[in-house]
Length: 567
Image 1 (cartoon, rainbow, N blue to C red):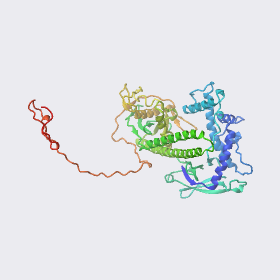
Image 2: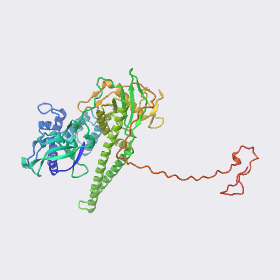
Image 3: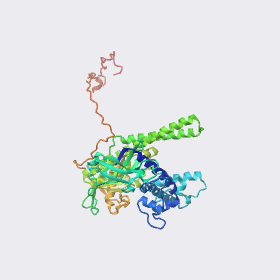
Image 4: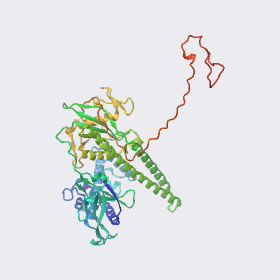
């Protein structure tokens, strides 16, 4: 949950202190020695590093530094360390992936332990570095050699502090949260008395006021990305989940979700009988986004056009003198275009999030209505589009899939449903009944099996395969201890029998999205129809023997002396 509140002067001063110290700490810590320690998970004495970022930073000696004469509480150091170390751990994983790709002395295009997207991005960085340094040894390349120290995000992680700096309480009415935070009263606080407790009122949205929330956690504060002078408070809360499926109970009813390039997703249901036989009606239901996907694609195209303008104008301005008035006008245009591009990105992010939760509500509601206990989705780490062109690949990337996965997992847990990720490869290429390879007789969206004669929409068949893999691979189901995601890494085949869809089968309920305009149907104006008389019957329409046909009579509109046709 995010709440926007006007930026308090004390919060702005705290941001200034924390950002300056975090930038300096990142520059000092972005070294190969620090990355090696974070990758190994141990300190210099061999002890295991704790999961808490600020405790791990203290163990490694990563201490923030402030200008001389300033007094900053140690709890502020924890927020800065939590912000920096979380970024350094991500960089340590990328550095480990780089060493795996260059372990043979040459850059490998792929590695079994490195994701394809990470390998592609690291390959670009290595190619750019070798272009500037042709004599560099690939085997000795590390991430600090390829890039500068990143700038940590401007955020205050209050979850890393204790009640001496921040507390959060719920009002008796249950509609507001009171955050008590110690903030500096001046730009350069020199003593303990310059840090005063300030109360910040955070309203609770209406859709959360009646929920059985057991605990509210301290928020993370960030500046609003598009509105200056506004602070955004990201709050997490604990809510008891509905009782889900017993792990000892076998999975018998699954709703599969296939990520479609034309729509966000298609759902279909597969059930297992008492004898283990799988059946499905192949009743795939396609999600209707009411044109929001096209709107996202249009916003993406506008962003690409702005990026092209910025690049071309930047090349023009680089060739002009520093004091040239033309260069000043070009740089002013570039600044305006960059602001427009950032605004487009923020708008796309908002629409993607709302679209993801709208889809998750639609899919979860259908699973509840059909009586399914599990939702199966494609594992996005094994899903890679290829051979569809640059424009279509960008369009597929804008479908908010990862956000839809998080939203579906969140809403499904609240409803007592289980979400399982299955391998994505081959779901739309193999028949659910006989596992034979499908053909495309009617184009991309149609699929047909020559072996058993199954024919249908490609996305519907893929949704059945996804649901089937959740049932057949439940013996190899594993839960990630870190993220809690449930995955099946190996696909198993079992024939799915096609059954007749009952007449009273449920269909997903589709609510109108709030970003879609509530248009009013135009009034239908009935116009009196003009009746034109039919032309007189012609002898040419009759079945008469040759030689007995008379010439066609003239019509009243165009009188003629005779017919221009010969009998």
